[in-house]
Image 1 (cartoon, one colour):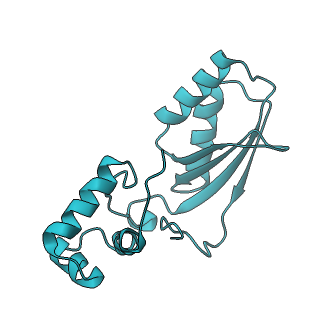
Image 2 (cartoon, rainbow, N blue to C red):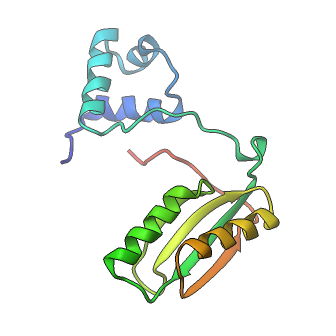
Length: 153
């Protein structure tokens, strides 16, 4: 269900996407609302599921996983049992930071974060041990040109 967002809600969301640690007073001042009115809007967006959570964005290179890998997967298995095993395997592998079922030539694309190529190889071996795949290939990211969690509002 879509939540109707007015211009003030969108401005609040834009601020929170940049820095969710700002005090409510500061956010309210930026959107010309009282502290209480601002807090009520944020709580309403949380209740409606517009705001799913507030997190810290961690620098991958500072915590030992600087290498970003796009893993491209094709499979001949499309039955529910296989899909459940595959999804369970992905949830159990912390290196997977994004997983997408695709249309077109690829079945799945994974975003994976690891320390280096040997760490990717270990990840790869754990993945194929958990679930059979028809074809898997990886592309190592040379340069991150844009990587954001902020949605266009």
